[in-house]
Length: 253
Picture 1: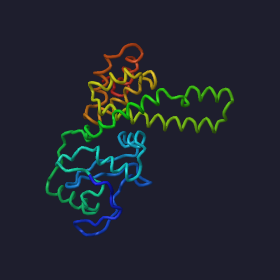
Picture 2: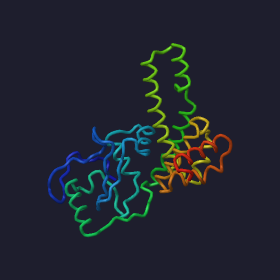
Picture 3: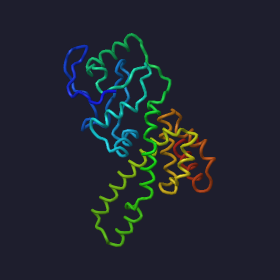
Picture 4: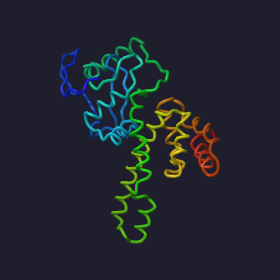
């Protein structure tokens, strides 16, 4: 894997120069990371769990973050790797190739496969576990303490709202890290690990839904199917809340 991404690349097909995308544009929520050989691509969102984990756990951004994503993505179904320069083919030429493939009736394989290289991603597991433990054990502001300060007139409304926004961003990042951890562990171990580390006590039952969403990314199994199987492993309020979620979202699934 190369250790840099050229800011200006000459397309091997049309010979025009183009700048590979390494992150979403300011007005976009995601960007496509193409295979270096065919026209398959993986859409990388700003809040994509693995991308957010690389940012939070390793402190990466910009080009180093883009290169790390190339490393942890599994090879394309065609056998070649995803790369930000798309195999030195510009976006215009890729769109032309894609149109020609569709005209010729060449359809992509629909079978699900995990988009992540679990061996490479697995190298992050010790740091991911440390990150999760540190956040749970930290003395950072909680929603309860923030509300108590506001009600006691210790902070004004503006500070309170800023605190809420900060909490939401922080928790969103933490959930992404936990989802990445679930991808690594797989369906047989992810929920048991959540139980062992007290994640339900810290985040509430909703963290089990987030874990199921992480497993959907790596296995293709629908969230409701996973939770319906998992709910029998919990009792009391946790099982009741899972049943409520499944009934509301799945229409009594």
